[in-house]
Amino acid sequence: MEASANARFNATSWRTSAASLTVAALYLCIVIWLALRTRVFMDEIWLIEWGRVFLDPNTPYSMYMSAAGSSLKPPTWFGPMLAELLFRLTGSVSAFRILNAVAMLLVAGSIIRLARNRGLSVGLALTLSIVVVLDPTLVQSVVLGRPDALGFLFSIGGLALADVGVARLLTTRKGWLLAAFGYGACVFSLSIWLSAVLMGPLIVAHWLSSWIRIQRSVGSAGRATGTFLLAPVLVAALTIDFSHLLAVGQAHSENPIFTAWTSWEVIRSIPGQLSVSLLLIMPGLAVLPLIRPGWLALALASGICLIFLSGFYPFRIPHLLMYCAAATALVIARSRTQDQLRAWQRYLRVAAVISALLLALRIAFAFSNEVRLAPAQTWLQTLPAATRVADYSWDFYEAGRFHGLQPMRSYPGDPGDKVLMWLNGLQPDVVVRAVDANGTFVLVDDLDDKLIRAGYCSTGWFDAQGRAVSADMVPRPVPSALLWRLGLFRDHGPYAVWRRCGFTEPPRG
Image 1 (tube, rainbow, N blue to C red):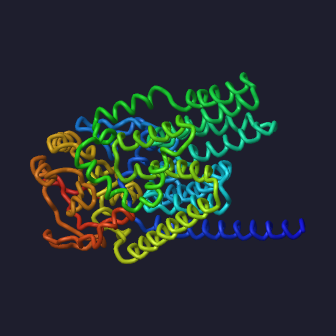
Image 2 (image 1 turned 90 degrees about the horizontal axis):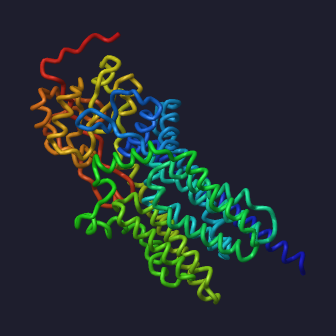
Image 3 (image 1 turned 135 degrees about the vertical axis):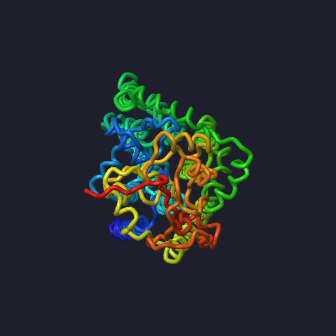
């Protein structure tokens, strides 16, 4: 009888492992395919540029320059430095995107471990992690090379490590070092990307819950203090210095709109931004009052409020998902009847299927709506090395650096008078912008007027393949509003090239 039960258990475990590996491999193949064919995105250029400035602090240019010509200091160091080093090795943004895809799979494993430690079955924990990982906005974050997944690897992965350490301690096994390493990793996530601070309340809630359990069960006050307090503080002291704190202050003073959006327009846009993620967000928010103890619910609610108040836009959703997943797992763990557990299982399966269908729609759009930028651009290849190219399209960053040019631009969102000041002060040799300003994040009002006033003349228009086109060419409109939420953008170009009036191109070499 016992042998038969063990055989059934082993068969079930093998099927679960095989299904998990299949889903992981399929996810990785799809996301890497999307990453390799998706256009360069503003946020990943910022990350790489912060890394370049961090490694070369004397550089005289960047893609986020103030009107006076200075560049923002990097607010974090490990994420930007890693992105820049990978770019130098490969000459492409794709390497960091692939790294984030792998990191997301490890985050999924961490979610499963945390959920299992809270009493969820393997099936429920696996389905919950699938709903999180396949969320369209989180897939979009990975595909576009944002460092959110890498940050989650250290914050959520750190919690999973600490969880294992605490579980060992509660059964009188050694686990102090593992718990210390886990909470230290959570603090280190701040060196990946500044948005990791949004995970603070969740991390503190886990830390405090573990502290209470250790004090009640083990009672080693001295060792608990060293593990739960000194280790994170030590990591913070070694990785977060005053220069990074000053950089955060500088970023906020340069343009506070990126850290504190409170306008009615932003608030009104939140439902639309959340629309593709509601199947996990709705239950996560609804069950908050059911979480016990009450202080734990309060901690999660404060983290959710922090996310909405910190400047809500689509890439705040991945952090919100982590809170909702935690809240959902805690409430499922309190389910007392099989009917309740089956209801949760059915709901999460439906959510996973819908997330998979949205990913399939994302793939279908990718086949028909993403026009690739031709790698050979005549206008760019003929420029001498070190030519200063003000790229207001973001699309020529990779090619520009490959050809030894100096890609630069004024700070996104600066008003026209500051852009004019920057053009007059920096005097870039060439300016390129997309005709479709809204679709490609030019983020400058009346750029053509500023270029004319700064002494620049238009020298022609071309399309994504480098072919000359008419100045009044209209880009193909977005066929669906879902394209942004699922991670796609408008077609590349057309582009306009401007040079200083009377400019004579010097010979190459």
